[in-house]
Length: 82
Image (cartoon, rainbow, N blue to C red; front, side, top):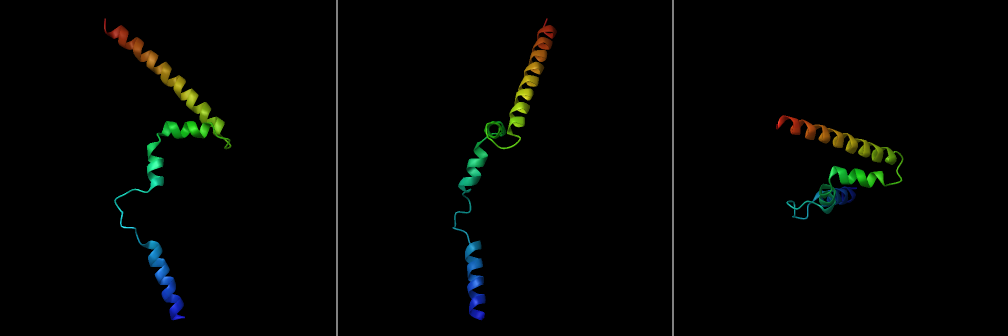
């Protein structure tokens, strides 16, 4: 019984141990952080996941709205400069 407890404790400590490179982020974190939100949403919109088409549609609507706002701002800048 004590031997089994010692083995379990040893396995737990081994699993919780680090490789000594605690200042290096793992590859999964780096890959996730290198993509922008827009890139992740674009990948999602092109997938076959349920609701992915809605993400694509929302991105197109947001782009259209942003373009309209930019045009309005450009007109406002042109009229206030004179």
